[in-house]
Length: 224
Image 1 (tube, rainbow, N blue to C red):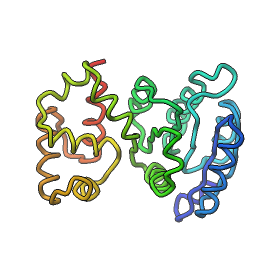
Image 2 (cartoon, rainbow, N blue to C red; image 1 turned 30 degrees about the horizontal axis):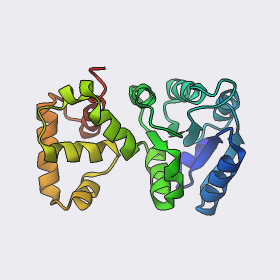
Image 3 (cartoon, rainbow, N blue to C red; image 1 turned 45 degrees about the horizontal axis):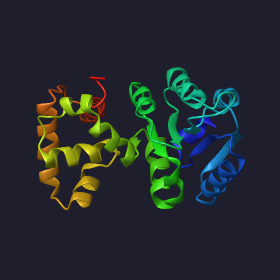
């Protein structure tokens, strides 16, 4: 399905060992015009189907057979290593900061980490699917808050003002500048100034805006 990359269709490989959840997500996606090209229950099958279809997106449960620990995460990291153009949206039952850290540490675009509860928030879930498929970064707000509360991460962002922290948290969730402005009831220029201050205080250099946005999020994780 590589040809779909030049069109508007999103093709997905879906991996979750919980059949009811997997089929529910499949039904939701297909109702919205997303093409589910494969639906599997373990990491090995996931890798096989990604190799076969080269989809725009893989939606992956963190914990799958045989041990139900991190098989999905390991498969996701392998996908990003071997097929960096394939977006990966991880789904997790609970907040696991170390999993988010491992996934976000990849250099490839198209990364997402959501709690499974977000699937029921249909508009937000579908928005995450589209953003990750298009190369964006989406992180569950609960994961972001967990990262911010970690003492080792607080040291890295201690120079930021409360407003700048709010902006950085929204950036970590994958919101655009306009999306941040709407959420925080700020003007677009105020958001742009806050982001510039964040880059300066976190000493993130370079001209590529997208890269520095990702670096800013990863700065939460640099001092683990």
